[in-house]
Each structure stands twice: as C-alpha cells, then as structure tokens.
Image 1 (tube, rainbow over the protein chains, first blue to last red):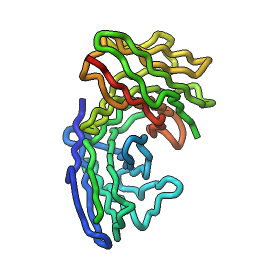
Image 2: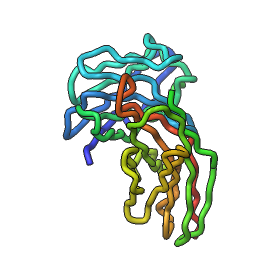
Image 3: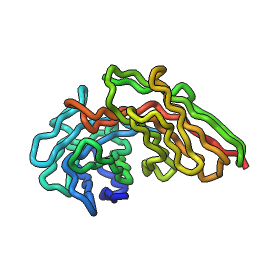
Image 4: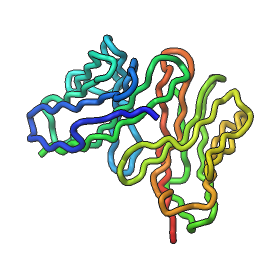
Length: 116
Length: 117
C-alpha cells in the first residue's frame, strides 16, 4: 500500500508557542488529506479535511485560527497548532487519499504533541 | 451525519480461539464502504478488511472475515485462530461514496482486544 509519513513523531513545546506538523504522501498524489486528533483510549476525531490548493474544511467545534491547515502541494499538508496550551496535548494523525471516489485512504503514523 | 456504534469497549480471547467484534451503523445511503481498522500500541492505523455495500458476499482476508448484514446495518468482524499480535484497538468505520462527505471516514469508539496466551 501507499505510504504516508508524519514529522515529527513526537514534539514537546512550551505553552504559548506554535508547532508545525507535516504530513507527506511518499508515493502517490494526495488530492485530499484529513487531520484527526485522538485522546488516549478514544476514537479518532476528525478535525478538518483539506483538498490540494483549497482552504481546509473544519469540523464543528474546531478552531480554524488555532489549528492552521495548509495543503499547498499534492504531497504535503501541514497542521500548525498556534499559541499552544496544555489542553492541546494529544495525538494527531493525518491520512491521505488520491483522486477518485473508490480510492483508499492511508494513514500516517501520528504525532504525539505535549505542551508544557 | 452517519453514526457508527461499537458496543463492546473491551473483548478478550484465548490464543488460537475465535472472537467476533460487533459494529452497527446508521445511514440512509445505499452506496458506501465499511472498514475495520486495527490500531496496535504503536498507534499506526492498519486496514484490516473492507466491505463494499453493493456486494452481498462477505469480505475475507486470511483469518479475518466479516458478517455484513445490510438490512440490519450490522458489520461484525470475526478473527479466527487469534494470535498475540492481534491484540490492539479495533475501529469500525463507514465511508460514503457520494456527496459532500465523499471519502470521509466515520469511526466507532473502538473495541480493545486482548489476546491471552
């Protein structure tokens, strides 16, 4: 199957700073990328959907000014957590899919964010 | 919005035995996919099996098979000859094939599977 990478795998930042998480599709063109947040022992919560070259569509309750998503190319999407707070500490997972309605969605390995 | 329900937060099985994980979903659509994903302690989401709604035949992948009951909106996962490596959180997911939610996955809350040696 196709490979999706995330960088960094773990990051610790101080409260009030911003942190950027990258999601890359390594061997296919990702027309759509999804960003999820997962708390311990819970399900994945979709934060936003981004299509290449377009603004991201955020789920209800997700602050778009706090979680900035950019999908500037067919292989890269970034999630920037701005002015991070301890409650933003979580596991963030991206997934990517190519064009076409029947195309599979591939998941990245996730990023553990800890805000101190 | 579509909802996916996994009513078993935890399940356990003896190694080499068979276990069935339950999943129900709610939708008014006729064209969709259903998935089972496995999330081991590494947290990497791994696709276990996929079922297309228009196919009546139940999907199988080696030791993994599903019981897809479209009218009942039920989609259970059977793991045969369970192995220690099957221990993980299992998520049932629904994906629409049409409209504005095309490609989006709706996940259940998950079932934590423990495999005893």
